[in-house]
Length: 385
Length: 249
Image 1 (spheres, each protein chain N blue to C red):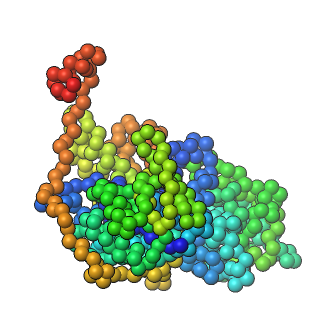
Image 2 (cartoon, each protein chain N blue to C red; image 1 turned 180 degrees about the vertical axis):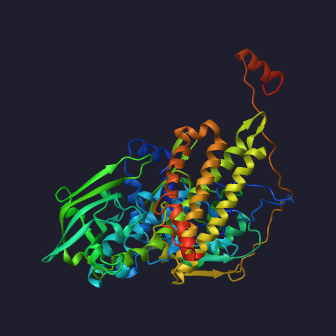
Image 3 (cartoon, rainbow over the protein chains, first blue to last red; image 1 turned 90 degrees about the vertical axis):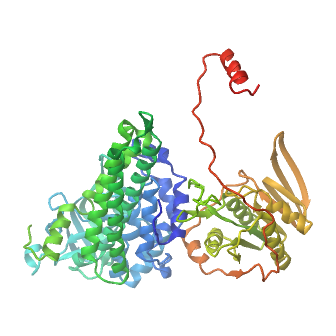
């Protein structure tokens, strides 16, 4: 299979890096629910996680299409970038809204990997996607904030030095709009972990290093505030498109992995003295998945194109995320079905990839919310929630 | 000292080669092309020699179609300092490549030339040897370890009976075996830097080299399909079949 691709030289080297991390490596991590430290280190040392950080702060300063090429290739080669993709983009909030002093202080370390910023505290047990209803508060006392509350589904918190935290600095009943009064701060977890910050891992159906996080009167220096107090919700929204686009690229990579696996197996597995891939019942689902993957890839490219032009591709980024996640899930399904019993065997890696691919129907935004967004903001229908 | 490394653009080793419909060669339309794996080993070795402080410059050279620039950029991303492409759409046989390489060596005066022992497309395994003969240089083919000490170098080669050790003086030619080293992948900052490194493009005419083919390909065809094997019940049956059916003993 051949695809017209951007950044071939980046893809080629990512693929070579991934070759050092075969299925065996990921199976072991999965079995032990272990963080893929060696893989993350290799990606870091090769500079791939600093792709989006401007050159003046020690990164490569490349456009989002390059970051997409990296993530797609990681997934296409059977690896998983979920353990570290946020190191690429969480810094975007600091880059766009932080002060020059904050950028100088944090970005070079994030670019070379010595400082890990890959935890993002937004979701709470009681608010979910209803972000403005979050209950974690920060109260200014002299030159520091005191943070109280709780976050959930905070991925990689145990493997991050800093956390980008969204919390309420003005109570909801004291602001004109409920989106006001929220603030973003960069918490140095190394200072407070085990004291006023507690991180509890949550075991899930796949190896994802997700956690719940508790703040008990956690002190955060005032100069950790990003941008202006009370405007945090807008800062967070501005990073959503990038996140959706990057996750879409991972889904396209997963879809290609499943499709290539399925097609190869269908071509070589012989039952009743002929390859099973000769049967349309086997071919068609794979061909269908391929078709779906290619169309979703086009939507992703459109989102990337607009993003790189400096437009706000809210619609396209959402559609790309939904379609790419649907495509990878359809490809996963076709791949398992093609492999029959072997699709369930750990050593084929398909069942693991299958579990991993399922996540993107739900995270970072669920398909239902994307449909609601399209209905309301694109089609002009009444808000449904 | 300069090191000249030859890099060839070939069908990617993961791609299943198919004969074209005319039966004149391999179908290269819309398939992935990469650097010949033995040439990657050559680049890696040159870089290690440079990193050990025993060379000042690594020059990656390729010959062939314009897209071979990508192959040179791969070498530059790994760490080579500059590139030279001798661009031609003509078919290049090993003698032509050796002559072009010799013409470039005459201009650049490298202390060492490293090439892959063979390219995985035509498996000729001739270019290095022909080049050394044209230059009247010592050569060590299928090197599995290389050690440079001043003007001298020691090379080990894997031969049927074990390891063979050679010593020769520079300038010299080495062809690389599979186990000489494990090539690195390029880091992102180096991929970016590679785009700005100099890459000279010239033609065979510029080098005044006659690249006309001495051999003619008559026909290319797929090998016969392998037939399924057979499990025999006893040694006696095996011997009988080898003798009377296969007629090989």
